[in-house]
Length: 249
Image 1 (tube, one colour):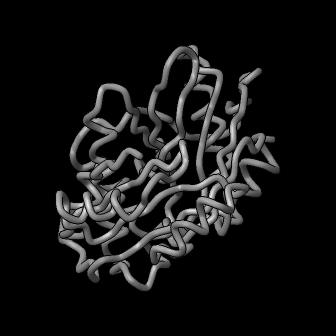
Image 2: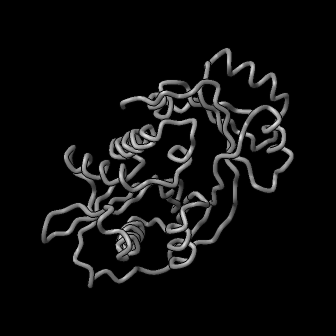
């Protein structure tokens, strides 16, 4: 069983955050736990388990892990460009620190359904700091993208999207958001039109994404409107060893 320490999550919480890979099942969890406690002294450990693998979920629960989120993995194969001529927006890479801070501010007010925000054992402010850090990482990494959706008449950034290029023609959607005052007006759909057209221009046709089962707006948008296909569902279980205090990153 692989144990990975997540640097951004750990910095934000002020205690090591570990992810367990249980894809090959669990072999002697007590020994694995003793080892990572000695080597990492974690505050928060989690793993993602296929929903049908009740045996693994039960083993984790017997060691104090608890359910915190239901996730879906879905995929879409792009076949056509989406019409965007009628929408007065520009979709471009985030260009400087000021624009990065703007999309980080949008993210801070957008995400309310993630497992960090809803978990009573995690300071909710840590979730906002976590997203700020991940967006900054996407802006800096060569294999990731961070784009903004701008109203050219006002210069206002109204939304953003981040993604990671995988192998071949595959791409992983990461984070996306619309400024709170524009939610409910269809701008999320328009943003995805621009995102998907940009993927096609880069030769990226196979999209993968993960989302929380409690985020109904995204479920309806991706599964309903864009016809993403669910390929796997997961339960996320976590164990807290000390109350994470959250950082100021």
